[in-house]
Image 1: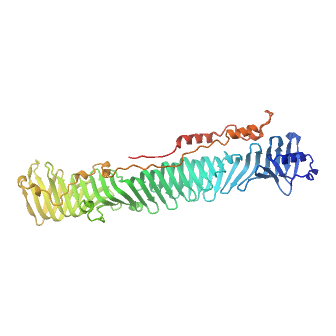
Image 2: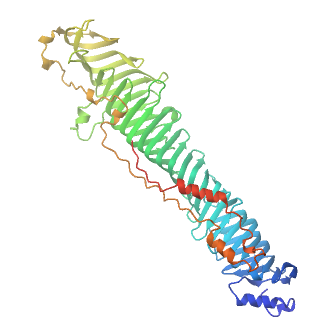
Length: 597
């Protein structure tokens, strides 16, 4: 029912009030009501409006419409209370319902209570009490709230704030986002309802069926299920933990990548791979890592280290395979090796050192620089080398050198080299020490024979069908078998140019003697700078100076009377919100990393 002269046959005294509304459009305007009552006990210029049987009371102010069953209007303060089934609408996008609303036409601050529901195009907010500042176009709650966005899930928090101009929510304290695929928990979350983008601040987790993410600064796209995490971030993929300065995550592809200072831990097989760029495909059980890549198989007595330009770890937990490509090296305390590539089967215990045939047949490394193993002063080379380990005992069991096998060791006292060569070499280990070697087919030997006082007896140069060498402490016992042809020559009668077999290649200077030596051939490497996320931008408190000034302007001249426009404002600004912002300002500075080792 609109205000008109005929209507006031029921209540003539309201005509003056209605005219005053229409003359001052910036004041609250009653567009429709059923009947009105002015009760002097409530104060001067205080009118109570009640709905009709046909429709609710309709209230208008500065582009906002409100409907309710009952309203009390305080004309002198331009302040209204709305009761029962209250609906408030701003434009075509913002709708709010509640049981009760207070609204000041001077401050344009609304306070809603009782089953409050705020709806905007992308989300629905429900809470027990809500402040809505129409001047700043922001809503705020501190009594726990819930936001539902269809594609993102449900977000709950103790404190929340919504900026309608930017479609941005800021959730504080006990923030939980529940999605059918995962649950996100944090202490502060900035969420944009139009894009579904979420920014996490402080310790945060995202837990799904097959992954768990932790970070202290991160971004997550709830529409596409992708994320980017920095600052103490890690991803747990059931049996793998990925740590790095910067992590990227794609839930739909079961994929993660990491940049700078990466550690990927296999919690089942007790192995670790490190590097500065990695890709993890959970569904394929594979890890690709490069840039100073290092694989570590942790053993009770001695760990095995493998380095290559690129490492790949594939296979189910019960059957992992590690592949190292190009300039591959391995190191243990009692053994080291080098080859073009390494293939390690952790289930069978077989580690293969292989040279890959390059497109350029003149490549010096692939043609001449064959795979090599060093063990206790012995150097073994060949076209390919197999190391066989006892998986249960975590010990070396044997090795096989295929084609062009060549064993070299320095003479214990002189400058010469003991050498054995043949088609194939087989070695046996006990307690990770080589104790027996067999070389078969076209076997040849040059050996500096000494007595028990280390006096040189002569130089043995012989050929045979096969040669067996056993190690008894510091002594080497050599047995030549089948078609033996050769002799022991005095050193003075053995020409120096005959003391090395064709193909002799002592490579002791290449031997890795520590983990750091594995990287000796790598070019200088500088970590890229991680751009990170935009710096944290603290917001002014909801009850800021500008709002409090508007509240002060709404006071009556009589200071003894209550200022209704400010009666619902907390006596003190919410300390949790303020502390959270201060803490974020200190801890979340612009993150731009450039670190190395």
